[in-house]
Length: 258
Image: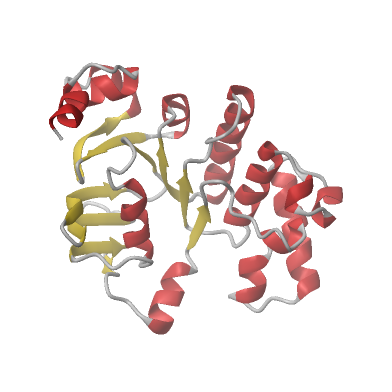
């Protein structure tokens, strides 16, 4: 019997009024695998993640974690599911009014009711794992560079030792060198935890580095997926255009028809 996927979506649909955002998503991620989802703006990448988390309710379809249906979960069952997740948000999304260590320890203290000193000790340990010293713990986000903020956001994502981590545009706004540093840290943290990861990005350098498998979403559907080594000979004109950043191609033709 084949292993049950860690995450599995089947025929997931989501529309906002007349706008169909997810148009029958089918994708699965094996335990410990890193899936990177590529695709243009507005193709449904972030909506898909929010549907998995239950922040947005999918209109139909199946969303399973460890073989268990999660669509429609509420109350304590949903809270228990969310305890398995860590999230690195686009733009870091740190709380400006809290020092760094409280940002990192936020879930530990709020969701798990952990005492402040124990949570702070864990926060400092997680900060060290992303290359930041204990002195950073008392600073506020506004005192940090963009790259340091992204590291703090990564430390927060791994603070509760999640089994699943989502990365939403993890290298956006960073220079190429810092982006590569963040990519290396993502690989290290995911492997250390043995976590399953889904990342969404426009950055092909990042996708090639952190992925085991890459999937492309277009007009609310997965139009290609495969090992990252296979993406350069996908045979899919939409994928070819996207990964090479070409203005000419089927995606542009669709834009012109709109």
